[in-house]
Length: 193
Image (cartoon, rainbow, N blue to C red; front, side, top):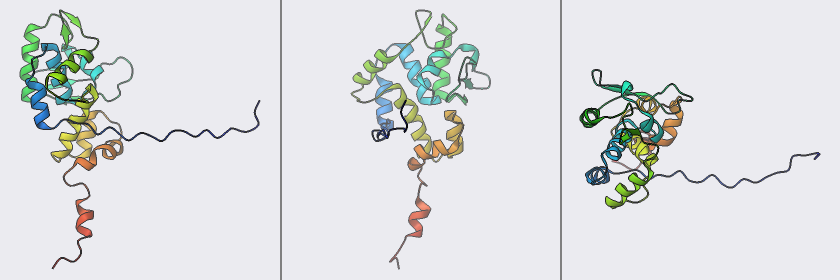
């Protein structure tokens, strides 16, 4: 038995990854030829800020075309980052097309079976679009950044992302808001006549 806990120096925390897609990059990604289920998954993640697991586990009973919302919560296990979010026009049209062709209960399907991973399909689409460093998580991050840049409140973004604490959302996304630190900058306006 040791008498004292030894000091263990931990490596420094890595810088957060700041990769997100610009509108031009989003257009390029959505313009590539790829399997329909990959396009559906990409659109779900970009327009609902869903994590890849939530997108792949989404079933048709949680897509409400009448009220135009998607319930990303599945009721099985932890619901980290899962919320009920509205569908925009683009997603509604894509999901209506997918629903007509559906062979299973899962929204993202291939040959009537749920898709377990879109890693290879997404990587191929990203390569075809001439992009680098784009993962499924980057799509979620992109959605949040674009909401912040559009001036959406941190509270709304937090709800959309399924965060339980707005402070977490603000610590990551406030800097993308056009109002971020503007009041502070105006307070430091010196020498102006």
